[in-house]
Length: 126
Image (cartoon, rainbow, N blue to C red; front, side):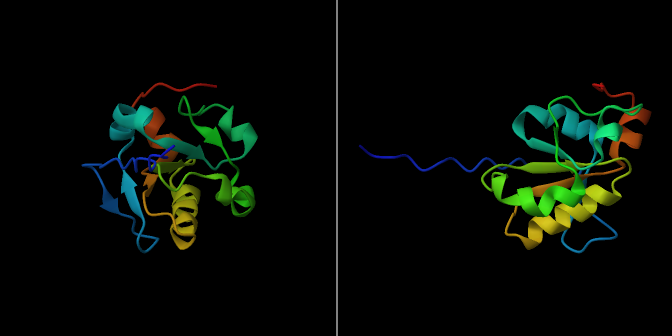
């Protein structure tokens, strides 16, 4: 029996821009994430009450609180594109930088966080 190598699923983002606060981190636009959300793994790094609170969360996003990321990073798929999300883009930028330092290559920060997502009136779950 031969085992096929797992396909490396990378997603390219046209809106990719350098994050001003974290070297090597790239931000992507919420609208483009919405178009490609079924092709990526989305990790929301806010607190549980924020995830279910007034800003809601992106449908399909998994909640991993930023403080717990170091203990959970090994469970994340390195063969998949991951987009980190938070309230404004600061904590998720930090999470993206942390993932890069731990050997992840296809990780992005959602620019503007859930504040911008809501401002653009993109769909949310609560």
